[in-house]
Length: 178
Image (cartoon, rainbow, N blue to C red; front, side, top):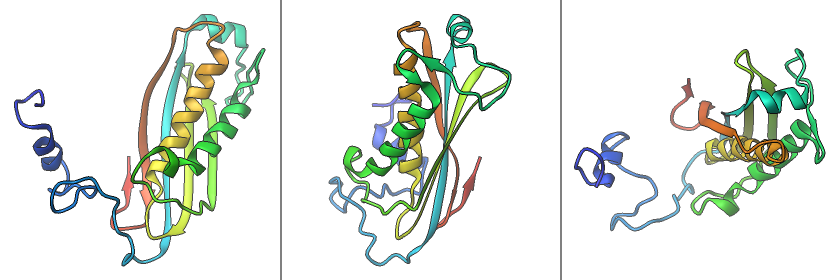
């Protein structure tokens, strides 16, 4: 049951298009059949935000340059996160049960600090295929954020991965932009 007393499935369905795509006619989990879909160019961008406390930021000596690398004893934090996020995006179908394996054509991860001294990670993924890459972008951004956590946790465990959200998607049935 959800907070409002409705069964959770009913609440989720009322918030979408009244039909979950990963359930068959008998409400059993299933992979979506994309066989009849058109091959089109599809892209998605996801963003994760990592909050590092002031003590960590002081030790890392994060400069005023928004793209400046930070280092720990484990090595370059952003460069390692970019590699990890890219690897994760390519393996999304191995991690999330009903994701299709996709021939990813582009995975670009951009990491920067914002004016609140938070680290923002944008992961953009593109493919020419029958299905979208939202999950690949979300996975890439999340794993990059977790890598930053891993690289910095020796300094403090007071690190928060604040949010991960889809920023935009293009191609397929609907385009979306936050």
